[in-house]
Length: 136
Image 1: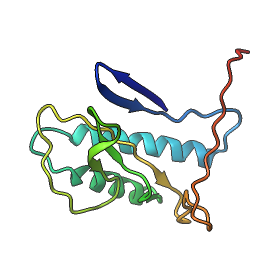
Image 2 (image 1 turned 180 degrees about the vertical axis):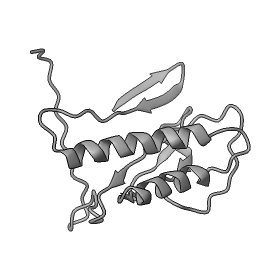
Image 3 (image 1 turned 60 degrees about the horizontal axis):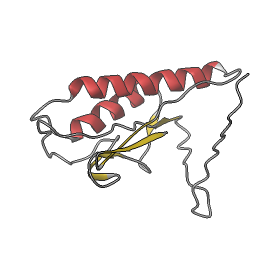
């Protein structure tokens, strides 16, 4: 994830990169996630309800044998980090219309159908972050 704070405004972005040998199942999941994001972006525009994003991602995930993630969401960008509106990536009833000038992230996450979750039994989120300053 890349986070930026510029002239009093917060923003962030992230992307998934395949590293090393990745099996076809993993390649397909990453590809489907990227396609779901692009489909959701194409639907955005003034007057479109925010829940359109979640519906598109949910429908696409289901059509391809995946599920959606309810543990994380996209968010508004502005003077506060991760501000409203929350952008849900699953079917929901948030029919707030998108407005001209609105800035938000679509942090789509889709999962295999086994309902794997990013939260462990003890309720803690487990992340692996690898930082390196070496090139090679």
